Image 1 (cartoon, one colour):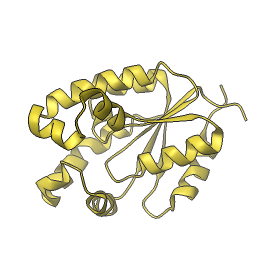
Image 2 (cartoon, rainbow, N blue to C red):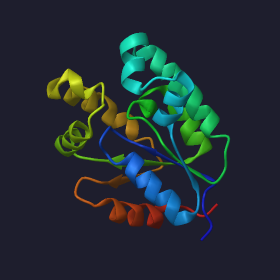
Image 3 (cartoon, rainbow, N blue to C red):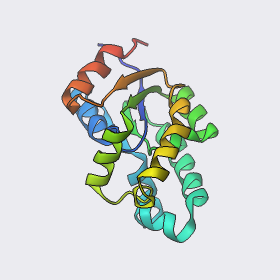
Image 4 (cartoon, rainbow, N blue to C red):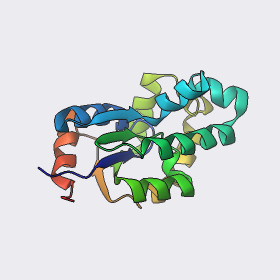
Length: 169
């Protein structure tokens, strides 16, 4: 199978980007990168602490720089943060530099998953605020090259769906 040189997973928090990204990378023999882990490594702080100490705008600047750097490597699956694709410059970089897949998930399921995982600064704002953010971002994710609904699928089945949608270069 001939694959795109880079695959980026975008979508709301709790949609499965990191879990699916790791599985997909292992399945196709690519490296895996998580933009949030890259940001934490660069800043020396967890994402929640970056938000608390420096604010969201600072975090988004770090995120955009990390994504641009991650896109310089070939044979890589990149899991992005939930807000990365909502920022126009980051979205353009992802669309130009990778085959971009929107992992879509029903709000209630995404919120349940994100809350269960813990450590999500935006979840702490409460379900109503997160629901507003979900609605605000939903249309932005539709710019991705393809979409896979992850709401009721186990991660392995999401990977199978993604593999069926990958184009040949």
